[in-house]
Each structure stands twice: as structure tokens, then as C-alpha cells.
Length: 240
View 1: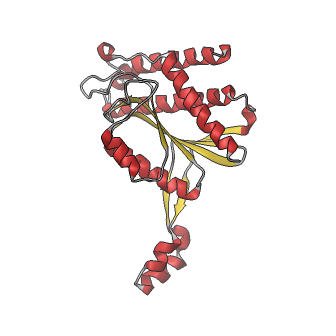
View 2: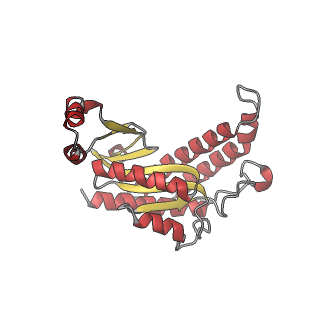
View 3: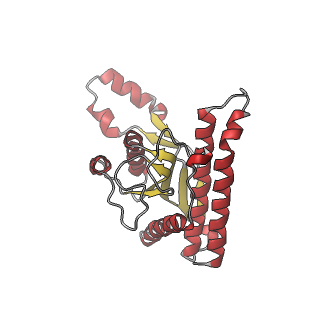
């Protein structure tokens, strides 16, 4: 492993340890002065985004690419109404009204992380503390909307823990997934790379910010994530 990448991986693990160990105390001392599940969820969400950004940068470094070509965004994307939908409307008054106010007809979507190489948006990363299949449906719908705007876009779901069932949380070399997850994926034209960082299925009654249920973030899982992301970025480069 590259010495610099190894050093950065150790920093990510240090950040993870500091963040997770401190979540409960920070929640206890929030503005309301009481523990808040919302505060803890927000902390974990921010942590996953922080880790994701570092992993993308390290994956790019692994490819030996110019850092100046890579940009990371968290920006609002306006998904416009489809013309075909307007054309099929039977009520002419409604149809004309929409056409006259067409600039107002869009769905506002803000991805967690958008990755841009040169002038091309190539990758969207959804960051979750954990994911279960009802949440996955929303991820797939949002990804489909985004792909309509950027047909060559790639998609990654990065989660600390998995609640998708199957073997997503086993961190094996080959992941077979779960029947329900594969079934959902089969209904969408999205190739979604699912990356899990922590071993062991998420348990609602065993939150990892509690010391007795803490799960270590390992170099091996981070290196595997870097390998997957670098492969996705390399494929995007080949599509230019």
C-alpha cells in the first residue's frame, strides 16, 4: 500500500474513533440540554460524508491523476419536468399553464456528494450511517432522476453499517447481497455500488456510539472502498 495513502487511512480511522466516541456526549450537551437521536444521526451522516470525500481523493491519488482535475460538490440539481409528460396531458388548459410557467416545473435534489472530473459530473455518492431497503428505494429513485440528466453518471452507496440483509455487512471479497435488495435493483436501470465500512448487521438496540457496541473501522475495509471507488473513477475516465 502507498505510504501516503496508508497514512491518510490511519487519519480517517482516528477521525472515526473521535467522532463516534464523542457523539453521545455532544448530544447530551446540545442546545436543549438533553440527549437527541437527531443530533446523533446528524453526526453520523456528517462523518460518512467526510470519510467519502477522503476516500474519493485517495482513490484518485491511487490512479496517479492530477488532483486539480477532481472536484467534489454538494449542490442542488434541478431536475426539469419531462416534455413527454406535458405532451400527454389531456387538459389543454393545464398543459398551456405549465408551458407558460415551465421554469417553475422542476424537482430540486441535492446529492450528498457529486464528483466532477474536468468539466464532467461522473459520480454521485449517497452517504448513510446505515441503509435498509425502504431507504434504498429512495436512493434508487433519486439516482434515476439524476441519471436522466447525466446518462454516464456512476452511483455509489457508502454506508457505515448495513441493514439490507444478506451478507452486505460481512465485508467479504465477494458480496452476494440479499434477495430483497437484488429485487429492488432489478427494477431500476442503475448500477449501484454498495460499500459497507463496518462489519456486522446494524442492530437498532446496539448503537455503535455506545462503548459496549462500538465497531472498529479497519484499514482493510477502507482499502477495499478505495479500490472500488478508484475502479469506478477509472471507468469514467475511459468513457471520456
